[in-house]
Length: 115
Length: 114
Image (cartoon, rainbow over all chains, first blue to last red; front, side, top):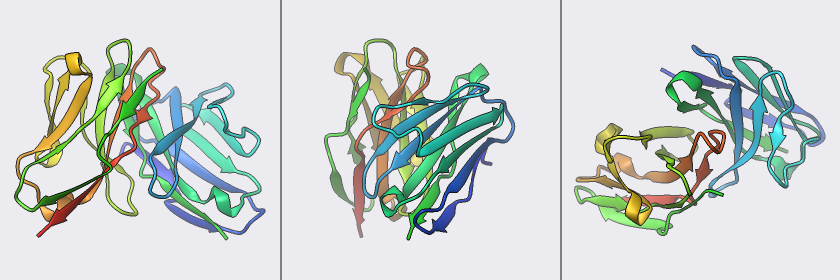
């Protein structure tokens, strides 16, 4: 079964609104989670590293004010796309590191469509 | 910096034939290597991974991959493909030294002919 859960799996929102995507580790604590983005027919690009209890570390070119990341607990990281525009439409996927076994688990991903 | 190259953008294979997907990585230390599969409109499914030990790794769905340090490669193979293997395949590299971030290759789309 899934050990990392993302919600929602699909969301449609209007331009200018904000949308939140959750990433939960279900049976382990994850001090570090990662957020990736996949453009249509493209590969996955790392957006940011989410660290529990501290600020996220963003990759170059990713707007931190637009993609807000909060890692409020050891099992939950959230990505909020603020003032969404159609070009933000994409597949967003998170991963969590299970430290003791050095294993990385991915969530199921979230399809965002901004209309 | 770590990087991954998947030289083949598309591969077409007949059902029942063998399949090999190439993956070359660039990383100074010992990498973690992964193969993921993504069906259209779906998320990522881990096929197999290499962290250490035996360089021939067995995965799910009959896939295997071999880590060759001398060639900086981690090619994915399947002896006999099924129509359900048609999907996008991604190779990824990571490491503890890089904070467990994964860098993905560009992907290889596999088409299966009946």
